[in-house]
Length: 185
Image 1 (spheres, rainbow, N blue to C red):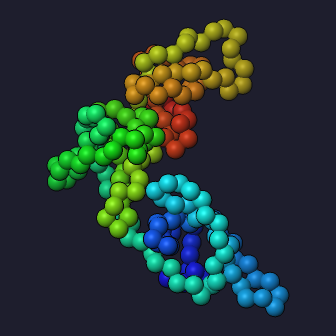
Image 2 (cartoon, helix red, strand yellow):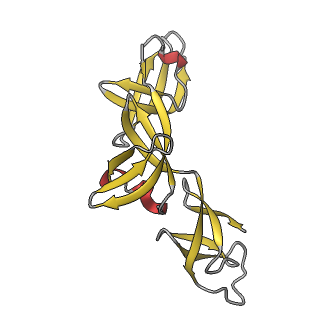
Image 3 (cartoon, rainbow, N blue to C red):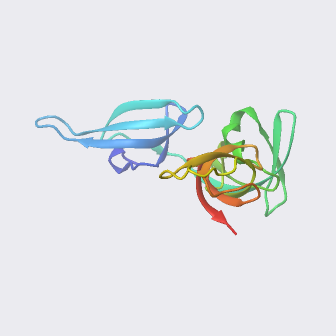
């Protein structure tokens, strides 16, 4: 693909590394050749790269595949996941995907992103349902606008929830922002 076809979210290979396009701006100045100011994020390390590309530069688009896996158990430094279709089990290094395990419970589904056949990212489902195992009771007078309190979930994660949530309630959480979405019946 040419650089002028690049869009936010595209995954490309440059200098032997795999990047995703975070932002881009087409720039055309009088009497100068047009170029694209690009901000790229390396998928393995998360490092940001800002560079300028000529509109005629060639980019290698990486093949991306997202597969859903089910968490089974952890053993030492490894986490074991299962492909729900083939029932194959895959070990993944715990330290490489520590953030993804924040809302981890047995049987939870995760999205594995493969680029050129290699695992680049492990992410929990965008919206998950968990039970509140511990939270303070609401106190009279604590009803200021959007008053929030801390709640501990069954996975061990702690998030802010509205005052009406109590221990035993099931809630939906947005894993991208670690925010309460709604109470689930």
